[in-house]
Image (cartoon, rainbow, N blue to C red):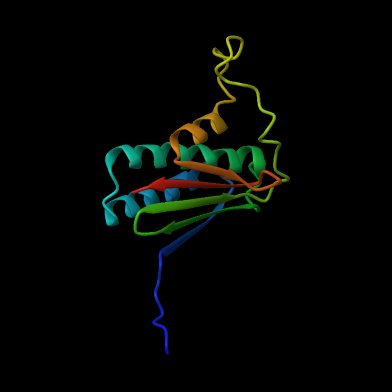
Length: 140
């Protein structure tokens, strides 16, 4: 018996040079996907916040603003969720040993909240072993 070729999702990919201006391309893709798949305003806001945070971290901390290094962003859109993957060409980091940004001595610091934000706004947040790739799941 022959099985039909069923496409389960649609894949979108960006290859972004490691410079701040690349965020404009990212935001345009998030808006395109949100419009095309009728993503709710709350989920759209969470995706925009998380993806901005993840890509800026990849550009600044992962690739050290080296414009010859790329940040790869994939979005796989499925019927009930979008899975975003952000990968940089850096060495990664130890995401399990980060300071708690809600600790009293950290509350007034201007940095150090990125991973906290990702874990709280995405439905699921998964880092690879080396810490240079994050997968963010959002129900739509």
